[in-house]
Image (tube, rainbow, N blue to C red):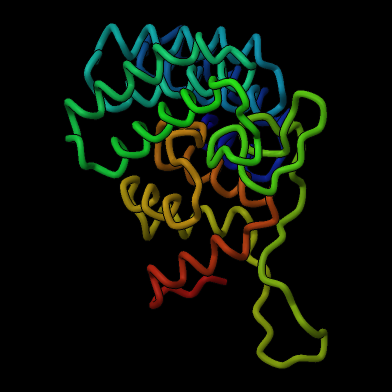
Length: 261
């Protein structure tokens, strides 16, 4: 489908073409009256626009998508994820007070549907705690783990090189490092598309959450509501932070029988 192709192009960093396909898909779904597909596509397009720094349009689409999820399934984890998406965008825009109620509502849904000790619920709770910490006087970016700021990130103006705020377009894969051109049995870099396919094949969304936990990345701050979207955005995050090899090593540890190449 066009939406699936748009997901793939977004993974490759071909943002303009991905945006065009998302918008064409939206037109089709709206004409068909498929509200759920409209909401999912709006959320995916908002994720893309957020990555490109087009916050106002991303916010508008997140709100439209959330309205549909809340109307048809107000207590579903997908609705909680939609709430987190909007909250994360507002936090990235510096509206900490505006982000809080969305994080609080998302946490309430996760606690109700998944239980207090589920990894997703625990990360949602940590997200809210981090937001509260960031709101305190004397907060320093270097102390914030996950979300907008992480230890080691470089701040430039009001933007941070990270998956919530980064403006960078990814156009190449930084897969496995080759030590020497003459080395035999050299591992070849894994393309973003191949890595995404392997994640979709060998992990479900709960297991992807565990991968994020091992990487020290907040799962709920990775844009998207589906396994496909989350996998794509996690790869983009690792690309931006030069952590692709680290992601691959964690995957190898969890799925040693899979050929990660």
